[in-house]
Amino acid sequence: MKILYVEDEKHMALAVAQVLKKNNYSVDFAHDGESGLDLALSGLYDIVVLDIMLPKMDGIGILRNIREKGIEMPVILLTAKGETEDKVAGLDSGADDYLAKPFQTDELLARLRALGRRRGQLAQGSILSYADIELNYNTLGLYGNGQAFHLTLKESHLLELLIHNQGHAITNNTIIEKLWGWESETEDSHVQVQIAFLRKKLGLLSQAVKIKTIYGVGYMLTQNGEG
Image 1 (cartoon, rainbow, N blue to C red):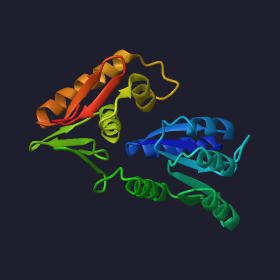
Image 2 (cartoon, helix red, strand yellow):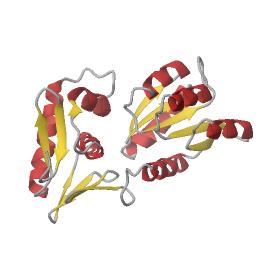
Image 3 (cartoon, helix red, strand yellow):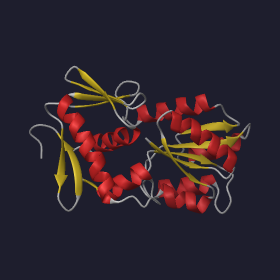
Image 4 (cartoon, rainbow, N blue to C red):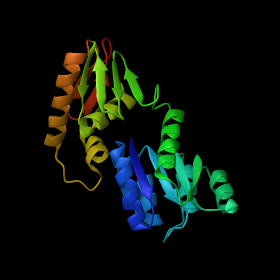
C-alpha cells in the first residue's frame, strides 16, 4: 500500500517513514497543508496519515476538501494528546480513525492494517488473493501451483496495484507514480522491465493469471476467460 504522510515535523516524519518502509509500505511526504491537499487529491494513495496542526492549511481543512470531492480514501488523523475537540471535529469531517501524538509506531501499523482490512484490501491478514495466486505483501511472498517466489518490493507493489484494478487497464504513468513517486524521472522502459519479471514468475506459478498489454494504454491483470 502507498501512504501519504502529511506532517510538518520533518524529523518525526522521517523516523516514522523508516518504520513504515521496513514494513513494506511505500511512503510520500507533505510538510504543509496546501501540498498535502494537492497530493491527497491526486488519487495515488491508499491511506493518508494527516496531522491537524499544519502550516498553510490545517488537517481538518484538508480532510473536508477530500470528502467534499467524494474521495473515500481512508484517513488517520493525528491529534494532540487530550484534545477531544480535535478528535470530534476530525471524525465529524470524515476521518476514519485518529491517533494521539506522541504515538507508538506499532499502534500506527496496527491501525493501517485495520483500515486496509476495512477497505477489503486484505483477504486474510496480509494475504491478497486473485484466481489461483496469493500475495503476502508483508513477507513479499507470491504463492501458487504449490510453489512460491520471493518478490522484490517493486514487484509486490506492482502486483498489488494490478490486483486492486483487475479487469481495468492501468497506464504506465499511474504505475510509475505508484511505484516510484510522482516526482520520479523513471521512464516507461523501467515499467516494462518490472512487468517482464513479474510475468515470468506468474507464468511459473499460475495457470490462470496473465498480465495483458493494452497497446497505447498500459497493462491489465486478467484470468482465463477474461479480456
